[in-house]
Length: 84
Image (cartoon, rainbow, N blue to C red; front, top):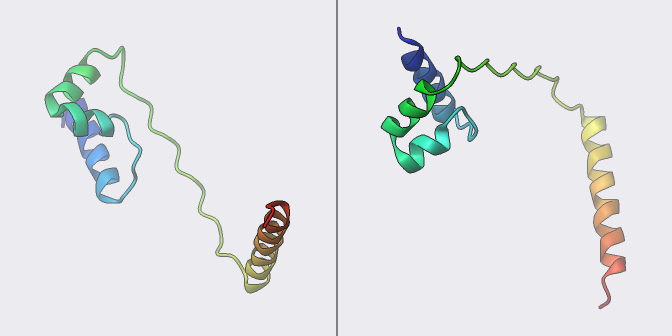
């Protein structure tokens, strides 16, 4: 598979997965595939793939409760700052 085809397939995979950012997704959406191909052909070399984000463990019930308490405290503090 050519470099452009590989790049396109990776971009398509990310778009289907719902990732809104990608190497040229906006360019394809606004100017078309031909403009995207021309832009990549003019690049000095192929782009480096972005490193995958490490997967984190799901939040525990205790952590979730602490996050909710912080958010509530922030909301209440903001409410007190705004005059009625």
